[in-house]
Amino acid sequence: MTPTGRPTRISATDVRARSRVTVDLDAVRANVRTLRELAHPAELWAVVKADAYGHGASPVAAAAVDAGAAAVCVAATAEAVALRETLADARIVVLGPTAGREHGQLRAVGAEVVVGGGELPDDLPVHLKIDTGMGRAGIRPEDVSDQSSKRIVGVMTHLAVADDTNDDAFTRQQLASFERVAAKFPDSTRHAANTAATIRFAASHYDAVRCGIGIYGLSPFADRPAGIELRPALRWETCIAALKTLRPGESTGYGRRFTADRSVRIGLVPVGYADGLPRALRGADVIVDGQRCEIVGTPSMDSLAVRVPTDTAVGAVVTIVGDGVTAEQQATAAGTLNYEFVCSIGRDPLRCERIFDNA
Ligand SMILES: *Cc1c(COP(=O)(O)O)cnc(C)c1O
Image (cartoon, rainbow, N blue to C red; front, top):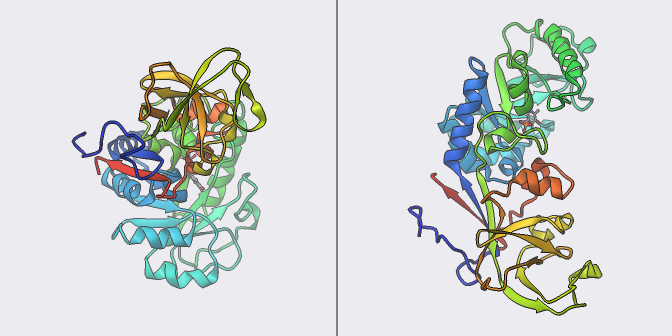
């Protein structure tokens, strides 16, 4: 057992669930401090929408606030209401659109809202969202008139290509456009940067930065490193549930996409796309007992097969993310981004349990 009381090895007999996500809250705290120092004197706001990108909103938000995040951001009213139960005092900003009928609830939990035009509520603190080029929610710069009589505490925008080193010109144009509008609201908090902009554009820091992916220790730059010292917080592991030796000519899985050309030992792992493991991970690596092993055949809903050494035993730990395999590598192998990969990891406690280290 580790000091936190969790078994160091997991096996089919000691896990209720079929896989286990472990989130190291010390890593979250370290990442928050790193990004905070980078953004200083701007504030760091921790983005914990989508259950903290699949990591677990309530413990992650508490750790982030602990490490100096001045606010937490979510996408939806229900997320704000749920977070308030464990986060008594922190500022909570709802980034996504909210309906008028949700405003009573938002007021009750003391949340702030982002509004992208139309009627501004005057019974809630409002962050006015300017669409400077994202082309989603937000008021166009030319449509901003004197809205200052309302409770505008913040003015914000969102950057479309801050992660793209080939398109800095577009980001600079977005920032310039934002600054012209923000000047009309001298008393409001200005915020524009996501993690990528926090790292790449000091000019985008303004009064606060809104970091999501970076606080989880993940890179905002697809398969390229973040370029700053970040610690991945999440491990995803499971175990070998059964073993089999395929004879030459035998295949494994739907579609018969892997056929043994000689005798091949495979381990069956009780994780599949119902747990958020993409079918596209056929051919990708996982770690079995410390060794890189290939996923053979197409992962199915509840299971996948791994080509394993002949001495692998039932119960051997299989690491899907961790031990040198990163979320970025798995995402790239699956043709997606680390953002989508970690958000997709199953959150059904009957199938995938979550453990928080260093809470
Ligand atoms: C999700 C989100 C962020 C965080 O983006 P990261 O790339 O994860 O840092 C910031 N701002 C807004 C408006 C968002 O929706």
